[in-house]
Image (cartoon, rainbow, N blue to C red):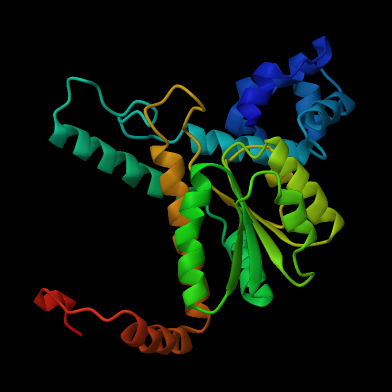
Length: 290
């Protein structure tokens, strides 16, 4: 759940609500304010600020403040007029729908790049490259989206397993080699399956890479590396999973490409050599010619 949502749904005491109201009124001006200054201006106490931060899942005021400002920046950024949840209506022509879906996906790409952290991406790539074996945990359509990534990674001689048998996810974690890592994909990051998988992975000290929403959830709190999806889509009232699906595919493509680049010449030579043997086809246009 995002900080903005936590502010609305968490049960605060009267004193704590004053702190929340103060934060909402100050917004970006909080950036340079210490806890003492904020407490004085809000006629509160530093301990109340810490209690509010703890209630919302943060270690302290600075963690909450920095995350709150980052979230404000993301959600208040100017976006297109295309509604990610209901991007078209029954009055739109097929061509109009095509343009709107294209615009939606462009906005999603922009969101992903804005949320992408060099540090987190580097950690994720290093974990996958070092371990060479990893298991993907996901549900529903995310399992299908992960299959193409598995397909491409196997072409680079990585050992990739997808945990796709219902009810077997804990066994899959327990059977992972100790020198492997896990890739967890979940928009909410809060399902019972993700919680169970995360808990056992932590017990086994297996690194966790999470692809999840820009919010405080089980995955974002426990992952060793986090890649954020675009996070503007509602859970239920929407036409389709356009933005979330695009996010997952794009982030997996980024991981694949970054891993490919780790041994670019070797991987390029291997892909060309194996493709010529296993994938015999004839070009049907000049652009396809080698």
